[in-house]
Length: 579
Image: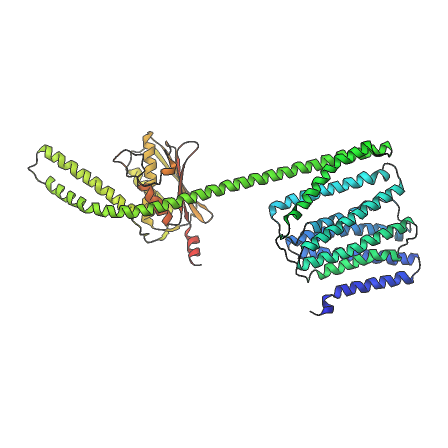
């Protein structure tokens, strides 16, 4: 892109400003010059409003707030200019002094200061946006109070044009200086296109701040008229700003993390704190040292009280938001700790099962050979007819104990088996229903009630049907055994889809778990000797882990145990596998 094309809007702005200056120098004071000046300034200001409004609609969210605030500021400024046009062109009167639109002119810079202080060039966290807005509203409330404290008494309590203009001009100068300071700070800490934007806005507003002081002096000295050269420092910054806003569309405005001294981040909160602490001091000054009329002092004391109530409410609101943020951080920290502890427990349990599985597999194979020999010899001895009743009873006991030992070895081998097995898409509802039917048919009816609730269109899971079925049988059987200890109860099983997972819950109203932390430990059982090996739930734990899910247990507050199994839905798992 050529040099002229890159700076075409600034060249056009310079040409328009030069043409305005030529007209101001060549024309004499007249109604036509007044119309030319007021209409031209109003048209340019409306053009700026349209440009910044279009920028606010076309930019990303982070930058949009900046352009929207600029739009609000220019709308207020344009309204004041249109009021000026109405008096001088339509009514053909001098602009009254003071006038209600003076406060609109005074506060037009506040949204612009907020736009720059918002720092759209710096990446922000959502949690800090609310606090930044509160700090801004506190400063805005304090600035409105200061205007009412110093200017309003001479405008609404008792009119005093000289004091009104004196305080108004002084505050307006302070406000323009503050705007320049904010722009200078932003330009120093920004980079790239944002720094260029801030520097141009600084130059335009510096020219306006200087020119406005000369214009105010000319008004007080009755040497000002619309279209004079005093309007040039007012007209030129507006045209300059229009060129800046148009050129900003071609600049690379990038949002970057804050990379400067962290003390700069504390500037606005400290200013808000200073604003609050200044209220009692201003109230003391109005009460003890203000030498103006009693009505003025009463008005200022009332303004101090109202400002203290308003800013106090903002302080309480800010503290509330900070407390909520702290509570959220504590809750998040607790959840992170619990998740980390659960993951650590799962890893420990998995390593424990893996190492124990190797040991058990070797021991079970070694025991199986002599056990098979004992079973064969015992059965051969038992089959002989010349045994005495006492010998027959002893052989019977040997055979029964050998069978029990063989079942234990079978459980050990099943627990130690590392082969994952073939996996296909499995309907969990069918497996759970089959396990319920099998176990209920082997028990006395009426003592326990089993309810099964299933979501419609429950997705399938990708797994081994035999292993899953055995796992469900183990959990349901343990629950039914616990309910038999209290002479019956109810077991509720649910199958639901939660996002990408299928969640199964087994909830009973039995005596609960004696030690939930040890339920999945190998050889841990609360059943009588000879009824349980303590390996069933350990095998279920390993099986669920092998299927990419997790299993947990807990005691319910109202009593009873709750087991929860989470397995990935088949569609999600297949999609993930294809990546």
